[in-house]
Image (cartoon, rainbow, N blue to C red; front, side, top):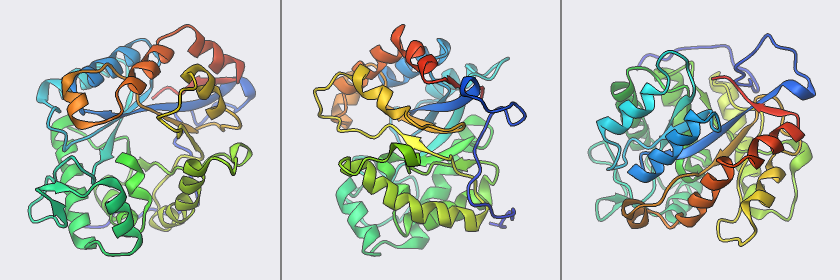
Length: 301
């Protein structure tokens, strides 16, 4: 790979309308549905929301067994004529998914290590950086081969891209193969940080190092992030989602996981009924009303 060099920046907002004045009425955000490719029903739900103008970004899991050529074509067709959605790469390095490159290690029965073990190994610097580079590059090149273009952005399944070793490998690959793509950092807006939210606080801390590393590589990041919550909570999603919008700046990103449920999803992921309730909320009349109340709108990809 030949490095594509760009002037480093601390943080550049991936704004879709750079010449438009930023006011309360014109703050535009990204609402990104993760996990496209995990199952046909999830994919169908994501496409439905895109067609209704309720999502403007989705990230694709290239190692997912259910990511067929038809699923890729159906998503890409949504941008024919008018671009409706930013399409990103959802770098996947945790089980139950399997690597796309040869000789990747460590594995468990041919699959990536579970999330907690992979995160622990990265923090303790027990992973092999050269194998991470090869695997991430393989997933990125597979995306380019499938879609015919580089991803608009890159993020990571279960936030594994934020941890040491993985972040270095990911930023190296993005800067060399897809230098115009921005990458997801997962730090909240300063006014939205609540110390009692341990999950979001962990992402805040990990994102400090990630943003600094991205700046040194000249890779753009989103200015703020929201969307992390306890998936096991019984609190209605309609009460959870507005919390994500507090203090969100222009170019901020909200992560979500909407979709329908099928047997393929149930066999792979415990996140099932939560996807259905998120889909129902984003498909409702309440969702655009809440955006408007916060002076927000979805960015034009």
